[in-house]
Length: 454
Image (cartoon, rainbow, N blue to C red; front, side, top):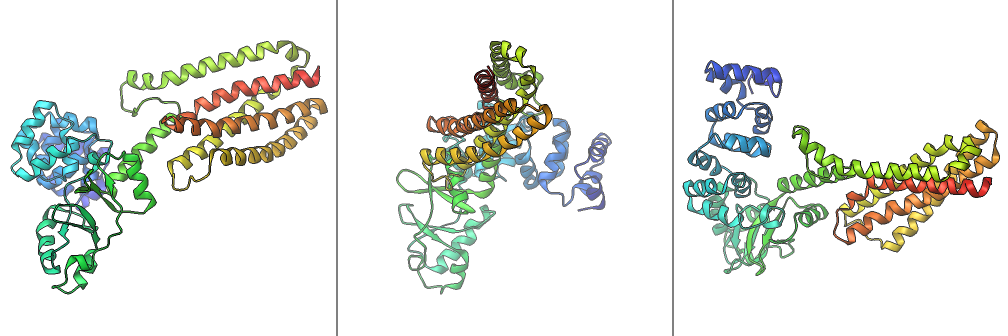
């Protein structure tokens, strides 16, 4: 990378210089400073550029580099940029992409433009691969897979296989394994490149391939695919159809994207955002995603206020009770969030989630008792030292034990129940658990005070 590229990479200063270079048609500056810069970094820089300036820059770069930059652009930015290109120009970039990435880009286009782009692709095999992949939903294995892979027939010799690898490898960037198929393209197993190199040229593949192979079906949900690849530590996994025929492969980079998107979705749900939004979305889109849970929180707060009003007489006779309402509410909310977060993490990694519902609840009960007793003892000491009132200390201590057990139960059981019904368990965390435990905590605390202090 050039000195200028190192200095200005990804900076607002560098973008301003690029814009100035475009205005004065200083192509040499752009080429010099971008030489050796990773396409992912170039795409991040161009996120701040106009579609026209993005096109000007990519026109100067090789199509192979430009294709990688387009793949890395955010979806909204990419859609705006593609409007600046005609179908033939888009097709030139598409031909440099893996089939799965090409489909992602083409799906950003209007239907008519998609057809024109596919018609403009010069390689009939690439066009056929893209059309096949477009039949699958984007959130299943068929929608994630790429057609580019190395395949060997079980009856080939090592010499034949090496010649075929050389031919096929032109279209495959990363070779993890050679997949072995029969004459009907049914997946039989795999063989490593290392073993092929170390084996005699006249040996047949059927004598050395490994039948122990993990594969996924085209219809399998992307989260299940991610779980399998995580569990068995796979760099790539073959995809088969209902007849067991090999139709593609999914590589780890595609699964990383799935895991990242899933984590972002769970994070937004746990924070009370009901739709997939980003910071640069419109005010209306962000507000619409936030309002549902904020309104639920408003209703919850109103119910909490009603509960306090129901015990208004107790608060008037013993005003010190009001001092510890925030303590009980905060403790219940925190315990609920902790419990639900642990369960959601366990559900996300199902290979580790082997305990039954009853065992899970039983363990929660024991943990709740232990933590409740510890916190109750501490809170009793604080109340007694501060207020000198042992009865009030007992109310706070007993309330904390009850609230912690109740919050642990709701925090543990709610995501498990939601998961049973096919609802994202992350929905149970955040505002839902906090609001529920706030209301229950107030009622339990003031009810215990009413009984013990009256």
